[in-house]
Length: 386
Image (cartoon, rainbow, N blue to C red):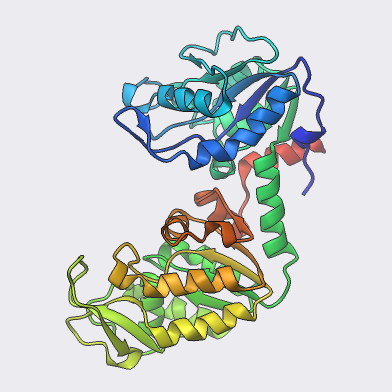
């Protein structure tokens, strides 16, 4: 994978436009979690210190395209970014017709999705963005699977288009995990439905030495093996697919599971052998024997890719399995990469994120990469470097 890198460019005196992922939760005009902003700081600081005039782009939420909505304004992000950087980062509400900025300054442009044509990758809009900069830097991996004007189109027309430090490190980590992994390669895939991650499961089945499944996905595999799942979430029409996947790679089934008659904060949790789930019960987690078995496999792994929890970890009494798996990944000597919103939420809850080899910032982009799909924003950078 060949592409230009921001670190190799002469940015002094240049107008450098950086597409970041500053899509953070905001409540009552205040940033609630600034993890993505903090992740972007080194990139912004590097460009600023190099003497560039730094123009930042991002989306926030899902406003109606072409219609500015106050609830989706990046104003709180600009204020928070100013505090973290220790310099004023003004928000430019109207910016497509020109930006008054000098080297050494940093500005944030209002939500790119306020512009008509952003999500349809309008060539006209992309050309207007490209005309504002000397160098375009794509550093928002979480949006790399989308061909939008601010992620893909602008890279086609900017004088120079390159990858930022965050994007570069993300691609290097994913490449290490999937392109040239240390064996055994173990993938952990959790989630509600086999159907939504079918292409990911099929792609991983061809690459991995062991595929550990959790959540509703595991329930479908349990049912496919002929065991009762009671009232658990599973997909009857995916049983054949689950059997085929289990035949093509090593997919260990849970030995025991945690069940409950309802999913709530005060529901009783019971551990049962996987063969003894009752009609009125729902599977909400893997049991301790299963967690121990999976932990052994993870301890012996050379590479681990993790996307999705083992169960309903949001409730502590249904979260022991996910916690044990998170601890096993953290304790394993393997190179580990974790991604996906629920996975990151679990790592934050158990304070284990800093013990992963790499934590991916992408959700949909992470899954697209796992299944071997094309990421438009990466493909265009490769084409520009050719």
